[in-house]
Length: 393
Ligand SMILES: Cc1ncc(COP(=O)(O)O)c(C=O)c1O
Image (cartoon, rainbow, N blue to C red):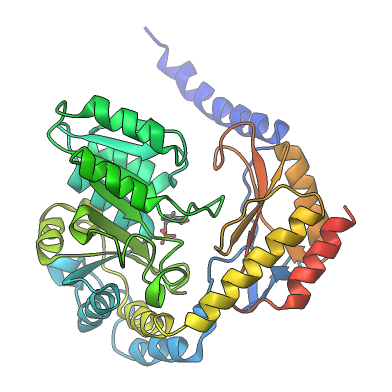
């Protein structure tokens, strides 16, 4: 029989020992406060730093019209929405935003969650159940992984973007489950590479599977009018369930699913993270509506981001750094160990640049990287300055 008294005292000692161990191996996570300063700079510990850690890819979080939409709606009587959407939390601004999203995504309807995380766990856990299988890319974001776990479906992981492995898994699973879902980020959140959506679609067609795409880092950034990756010419729209976020390129907060009426009606019955969570505040919803409208017209900024990203990657390569070539704003620079990447990130701060150090378990064990996020507000001087600082390391 375990002794409850010693279990109690061990509990706190165990927690402290675990945190100390994480610190000793360079993996301790720590909240560092920062203050927004401008669309391209941030203040940390009293220092003004060029900000390469933002997902506000189009700088819409700073757009005067988005701010105005927030301010004028917040002059209404209520701050929080006071209830879940089905009870009393669904205000006019909720409906307007879902209509704006559906227009943008060229779908019948849309559904708005309090975060992208909630959109993914709610959607995946609702879609799949014990009789089903989910085949998931090994580098999918934590909220897709958690959605898969919550669904209680049989989860099979395929090596990152490995279409031969996906094919083998799908062929083995065929006829074993009621339904099979292939789940993928469309732009991978750490490496910034783009999922092979056409190959995934072809395999889903061949093996009678549905595909689920998280467009969190693609919404607003890639595709026609910034709609994302798993849409447009060549995409069989009824094969894909697509989620997105309002917290990154849209510059606000929240997440969404866009799709046919039947999907949204069905999720209204079963998406627990939507049903049992307070609806987002109306002011945020109004700001997001305006931001989505603006994002759909920002082709020039999208093109400039792509060009800046490829040119930064080329310069990094020529300096001997290891990176990848994808026209997305997430530029990884790979290093050997968490300790090394932490030390480099610290030296970059001393040189005036904030570039987050990414370590396991956010990335697989044995890997570590600097994740450079580019936004529409960065200048040539910003990226040139970063390259100079890296050169001096
Ligand atoms: C791929 C991916 N999906 C979903 C999310 C969650 O979105 P949100 O921050 O809106 O909860 C993130 C956020 O980091 C992400 O990177």
